[in-house]
Length: 339
Image 1 (cartoon, rainbow, N blue to C red):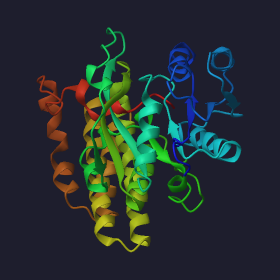
Image 2: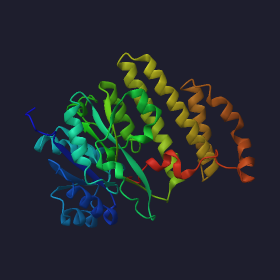
Image 3: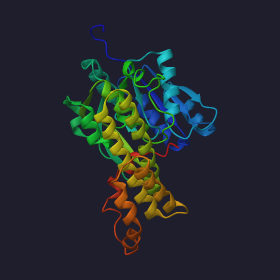
């Protein structure tokens, strides 16, 4: 790398019915202290209003409209990454959600750290949860200092997956193209939680770097949290099963078993949520999930839940909490309504 050169970063922004939020996000990218090498907004299916907002924003970006909705951000991210790599070949790619608000120095900070740590698979920053409708938090004074960094290994990430999000991280391009056999960074069969799959595979190849610096605001939508929780855990079970099979093929049986245990945990969480929600067919699906976990996956931890779940309805009817969990701090909040 030439002396004084900073690593180049391209940005991919998948957008689906986000025209009312997209303009502010694009303005944040346009006002970065270090400009992206290239930017592309991928509209997930024909959406004239979102397309109009993207083309009329102050950001110099390409707008790619997919012919039909794909049901999640994986394919739009893959299409945008391929276009960026073919046309601009950046050192890293930033997968920014269409409704999050990055700090104006985000690209400046992460490009510098990508340059300082040439072996890192990714650079991630902290972020602040912002509940939509509340006042915008003030920018942290610590963001004006030279931030500390620390390595991110696979164990550290799995201990706190919600602390690293695509909107506040950059993945090194040379790693992205190697994490899957088809050369694409995201598994298009995973509608939600696809970043877990990409991050795990990346961090298995090489550790990343966490910057102790607030990279922006993560927008939390108040509607549909319980529904997102069911979908999140169902997709998470699919994702962890895929990772377990991948680690088995890689000759990593301990990691394969770890992800199979995570798969069982996700199925049990989904079963509990389906039972509590009790929409038409939910309780039958809950039992099917638990039966599959016991019979097909051989996870006997699901058997006690299968036997006791019917009695939990009485507890819920008496006004008991759903696990004593503050929904505003739950993992559901890390799921955007991209589908």
